[in-house]
Image (cartoon, rainbow, N blue to C red):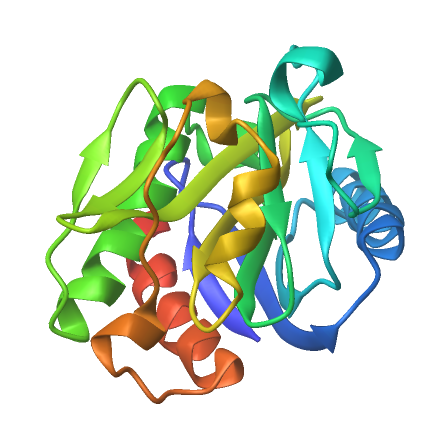
Amino acid sequence: MTELNSTNNKKSSLEASFMGLMDYTKSVELQKDLMLLSQQSKNNYVIGLEHPGVVTLGYRANIQDEIYDDTFLPVERISRGGLATIHSEGQLVIYPVINLRELNIGAREYVLILLETTQELLKLLGIESHIDDKAIGLYTKSGKIAFCGIQIKNGISQHGLSLNVRNDLSLFNQIRSCGVQNSTFDSLGQHQVSHTLSELYQLWIDIFKNRIN
């Protein structure tokens, strides 16, 4: 467990765990449980994992506009912002359940923290990227490499971000990713990064705990 200092000088703890491969619906239930714990304890939690192939739709997304007829992946309608994205094995997914109200962090600042943390991780691995404020995520010169979509309820965050590592990028052809037609994508694997998802997750956590402190 890592100690974090909030802006009002109270200490909040950060519990971080890598869960491995987990069904998407199970991860949503786990986040709900952690949100309840955070409400009671004001503590913070971050889980890292990967999902079997699934399309997720943000609450604003219209399925007819975002998903093509030939998709073969299951589709989950969820409560985060953003439109359609795909998770699949080999992609690192990170769900921080953070008591933003306790830490006095606003929604826009929090999204920037998530993206800048991931950008710093990529830089550590020798990969340059830039943040796009419209199609929210991180981009290299080869395409989109990280995605971000959150929900904040009662001051506590849910959902989070995903980073392409060694996942099948061709799966994105089944959707209009984040509302953009014919997007291009990149992954850490295409940059010869050999770290495991667990190792990448721990590096991300080490950066995140300093960003949020």
